[in-house]
Image (cartoon, rainbow over all chains, first blue to last red; front, side, top):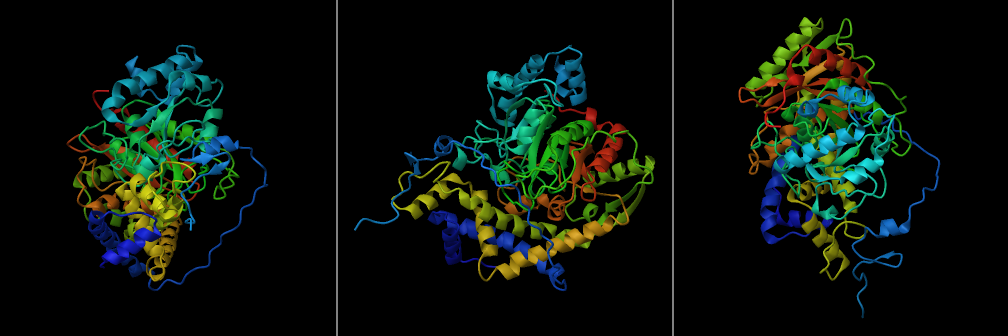
Length: 93
Length: 481
C-alpha cells in the first residue's frame, strides 16, 4: 500500500490539520504501515454475511440542567459579551 | 507509618473506623507519598492542594478516607483536565463525570490527575505532552499505557487505587507492566458520561488496585446504570466483593487460548509464567482445556480501523473555538482551525485522526471500515461461543515485559501492536481483568488476563481472588518506595 504526498495533503485538509513540509513524508510512511497491517482484515470477512444490527434507541426525560453561561464561555480562547469570537469568516470587500 | 503505603483498602478502612487513624492523617500520608516520589516517577499531572481535598472529605461512605487518583481524561468539576494534551492546556471541567459523582458520594478523597498518553492514544505513556511516567520496577522502562500514571502510582504505593480508561487495553496492559490488578468491565457497566471520548464504541472506565478485593470494592462504587450515558446497561447496583471466598466456583471450566499463548513474538518467560498460573487453577480444582480462536489474530487490525475512525470523529470538536488553546496569529477561520490542531495535538494523535479519516473517506469505507465492522462481529461471535463450553478464558495481557523508554521510537506499528491481546475484549464488549502472575529474571512484572461473558464481573473477581490468595504476587512491591 502506497500513500502519496497528495493523499496526505488531502487527508490533512479533511482532518483540519496544518502540516509542515518535513512532516509529510514520515506521516505517509506511518499511514502506509498501519493501513498495510489493517488490510489483512478481509481474510476473515470474505464469506461472512453481514448480520442485522439490533441497536435500540435510549431516551431520557429532557430536563433542563442549569449551567451558567459564564463558566462555559470562560473556557473559550476568545469571547465577547455572550459570544465566542473567531477570526473573520467573510472577508471585507 | 510506611507500611501504610501498601495497605489494602480494607485495612485502611478498619484503621479509620477503629479511630486508629483519622481521615486527615490518611490523606496527608498519601499526599506526602506523592510529594516524595512523584518528582521521580511522574505519575501525576497535578496533585490538588490539601485544603481543597479535605473540603470534600466526608464520612460514612464506602471509600471514606481512601484516596485515589483519576486519569486526566475524566472530568472533576472545577479541576483542570488536559488529556495530557497541549490543546486542552487551560481547560477546567464544568461538571463531574458520573464516576466522579459516585466516588464523591462514597466520600473518596480524590488527590490528583494521573498522567496518560495524549488522549489515551498509546501503550507507554510516552505521548503525554507533559511528562514521561516511569515504571516503579525499573525507572528506565515505561509503565505501559495509556493509563500509565494510574498504574505506576498504585504500584509504588502512592495511592491505594486509581481510575483509568480502556479502549484497546489501556487499563490492563499498564496494570500488567506495573504488577497490579486492572479491570476493564463489560461495555456499558460503568458510565462514560464525563470521560473524554476516544473510541466511543470501545471506551470503558476501569479500576487499578493492588488486590482483587480492593478492585471489586471500587468497582462496586462506580458501576451501574446512568441515564446520561445511553450505552450504559440497565443493571442493579451490586457488591462485587460479596463472592470473594478465596475458592473457585465449583466445577469451573477454563479455556486457555492456545493461539494467543503460542503467538509469534511472545516472550518465553511470560509464556512460562502463564503456564504456571494455569497449573495453579488446576490445583484449585478447575478443569482446564486449550481452545483456539483464530479470528483473534485479526482483532488488532479491526481495532486499528474502528478506533481511529471513531477518534477522527470524536476529536473534531477540538477546534480552538469553545475551549482549549488557539493559534492567535491566524487570519482566517480555516487557518485558525488547522494551525490550532497542528500545534495542539501531538504526532500520534494527528496520525490516528488521519488514519481514521482515511478509512472513513469515500472509496476506502468499503475496503476498511465496513470490513472492520464485519470482523468485529466475527470476533465477538467466536468469543461468546466459547462461553457455551467454558466459564472463563485465559490469555496473555502483554507480549513483552515493560520495555525501555524510547524503544519503539522508530517502529510505531510494533508499539501499536501492544494492544494485540487486549483489544479483542473491547471489540466484543467483554469484561477482562489483568492479574500479576510472576516476574521475569530481571524482576519485571508479568500479567495475564481472565475473560468472562458479558456482565460476569462477579465471577471474574471471585476467580481472580482465589488465584491471588494462593499465590505470593500481591505482596511483592517495587523497592525504594
